[in-house]
Image: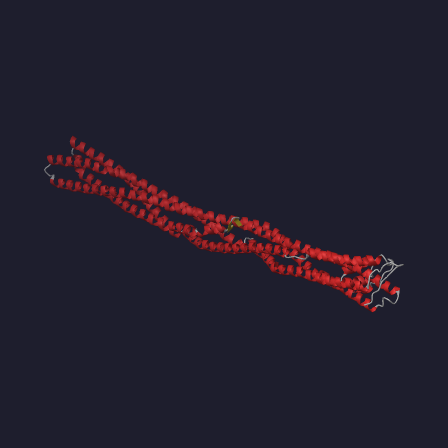
Length: 597
């Protein structure tokens, strides 16, 4: 290519065609390098973004699912079961306490009655000894005054032997009663023990149920309070994701703008080759004006492109950090809502689930109360019933023997001798004493009768009461269902919380890694500065020697642009700040998809 120069009254050459060609070819090479660098940065960020894009979505999804575990819709049935369980267990507790109290009252009253009738029984032997001596005395006196005493003596002796047998039976009953009292004391303690154990177990179960009900109410409130914040974090993250997607598309925009710059250079060099710059001075001046204007314009376009590149990288970095921050915040919300102890990986229901695992043993204790108490009660009832029947027999025997004494002594009441009257008075007095004591025995024996009936009724209620046996059996099954539900919820919440924390950490690490991998941020700006410096130098050299009022036609260059931002820079540079309305509308329609994309 020939060398052309421009002089003004002997000035040195402004530039040569080879210099112009070299400048723009060098610019094209640097633009290609910039395109490669920006592509590497954007593609690297895009690859990292694809890695955690779905993960961030999953964190939000898992977080919502985690809090929804405690939502009202999912736990209404559980809460209803807990409420029903609590109500029935409370009724069972009241019923068991009532039965326990009534049984202990009956057994204690039975114990008191046994102890009370032992006292008069202890005196029967002594009283009979006195009665026996009086009867023997009457018999002896009667034999001394009557020759017909043989038959009476036989009757006296037979009656005395029956009294002796009666006393032997009384003594045996007394011994049996004393043994039974010891057994009764043991049974009383046993009933208190197993009944108290059942009551304490029901109280513990009620505590577990109440804790569960309270826990889900608290967790529902926390979930209701945290869900809006969680959704806000998810929305912020979604917006950041959308902005990242938009910012990542700037690489295509930057590439297209650089290609437009290169196309302008190619067109310029092509025109330069086709122009005979030596033909006339105006021809060379026209070339220099075109070089000057294009150099300055391209410098402006490159500066604008650099700003877009830097802004896109900074926007991506900002949104990457925002995504990581929001995901960490989501994990923190979930952890604080679910965890009891931040140092121990246990959800808030772990302890409750562990407690419900122990409900089997508690319910077994409650269920054991019924057969154990029934056995003890039936044992007491049967023992008391046996003693009560013996006492009944003693009372009947006593009444029979008392009448026979009266009958036997009737003939002597006509004998008006002082010693007979004395003996008869002593016998009547002793019989009155024995009648009084046996009446005491009869009264307390009636208490035993009532106790036997009450204990039998209690044993029947233990086996048939809905509030006791049936309610507890129902709650055994319900407790299993609650335990299974809690364990399932615990497992699911642990899994979700683990995934959330693991994924949020991964996102933080990946975003940091992605930002650390951006290599050409400063390089891009420096190379643009070098290109602009070269273009500006060329433009300045020409401006010093070419009339500034002369401008080349830049219409062909403007026609290369496909984006409104390029045209705005172009129009600002050329001073054409107003475009035709039709053109603006057409440009906007052509440009919208690309810029939004």
